[in-house]
Length: 109
Image (cartoon, rainbow, N blue to C red; front, side):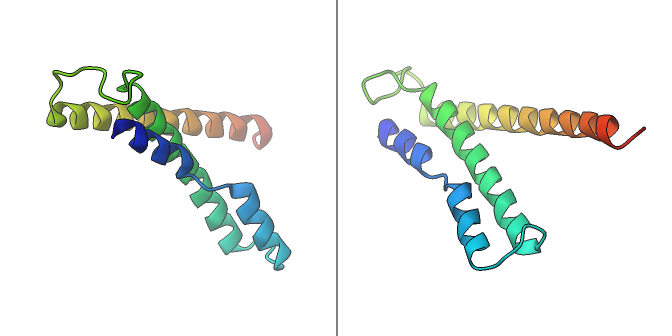
């Protein structure tokens, strides 16, 4: 069951390039709000899929089951949630630091 969940996490993200090219083909410009919202949602969706895939993959034993047979479902859910939060907050921190650094580099003389 875990291997099916990992596969679902892998294929759950959508292709932002294809979605944005469809929007461009119907005449929506990059500066319009709908384009920016779809772009942001696509990136967020891809990020969540990557984090979920990696987190679940850490628990796979190679045979399609749990790596730790003695782990209860509550422990598994708590571990996955903790890893998910840590990676998500770490990604946000890296993004903020990079954004601030780029702001100082490009906009402040």
